[in-house]
Image (cartoon, rainbow, N blue to C red; front, side):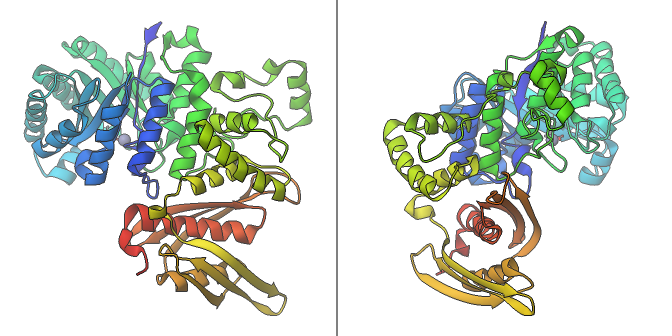
Length: 510
Ligand code: KIV
Ligand code: ZN
């Protein structure tokens, strides 16, 4: 079996999604789980982009062990200095330099000639070598580049000292055959290619990122750049879970394997989803909630007779238990802690004791407690007095035929003040949102409102996700409740709190 090395870039490319900004503590929590998952390298961020990201990368490099840590730099000394300063304490640090290689990038972004850009790349690698011999060089937009120039660039940066050469399909333009051909010609036609690890980084604009990555492996790539849940710019990056499981399901076909602990996949996916606020679509391969659900009668019958009739993966291989315990007021600490562990959250006995008391209060009010409820409770418990945001104290809505929907909302402000406002709107949610805008003193642009039912029956949990633009930045908020209006309000306040607490403390009312 050929060993395939896995670089996870959830914390860099994945975090570039508008609204998915993570705090330093959240990035660290995900990095710890990525190490448990067994990734070979964590791309922890882009240190030159902000002091907050610099600190987050440094915290990860200091703490996380048993995995390499890299961070991104443009081909300029100040970026490279920032990366090195942030990662130098890692067990195995690597500097990642990126520079465009397609004519579109050269002319559009840099207005420089091919020769100039090649020299700039070589210079950057030489500069980085003063810090470490472990250097990745990414030829941005290689998927649309002139092949001869790409090969010339790769040859030169290897000569300059790069140890990993990454071929990104930055715009998700290639198809598997085309991308495979590019990788094969790197492998066969670049004389010094055996001195480096050949890596690939695919985007999913045409839905082919996983296929392109697998085709690259077939054609000689030995490192893959991926993200959890396929997060990433635009349509996202190659999903780690998809490539890893394809290699595992078809060992004879690919003849290659990673060292990923696949039983940690579901837990990692849930952790990333809950901290970024970006849900996984139900039919997403491997980690979607329907990935192992069988609904048609014919399928259920087949699976009951023999799971393999309609299942190519045993769900336990990716950490999904076949029978799920339903949490109720009779569930003890052990059951709650096991479920939390499945959600990627561990806690010590003292915290668990306290958490279990809150859980019982909630379970008394509801028949069954769902994952969303646990995560909401957890978020509440983890909130410190400094990062307490707006809290919903009460809401009353009135509506009916021939009546304009009307809402009165009472909030507790971060400074513990309480105030109420009323408004009318096109519906109860709209009225409540207008009342909240009055209290907060700003009107965001609501870009998206989506409502989903997460459980079944009349008391189903409604899950709302909103995307809104506040001061030119996009924030995602989520809320779950058996009442659709309340879940909408919770989502709205969640987005406000993310905006206020994580990005821009000046939004906090005086
Ligand atoms: O998509 C891309 O080209 C990148 C590089 C930094 C590898 O994200
Ligand atoms: Zn990318």
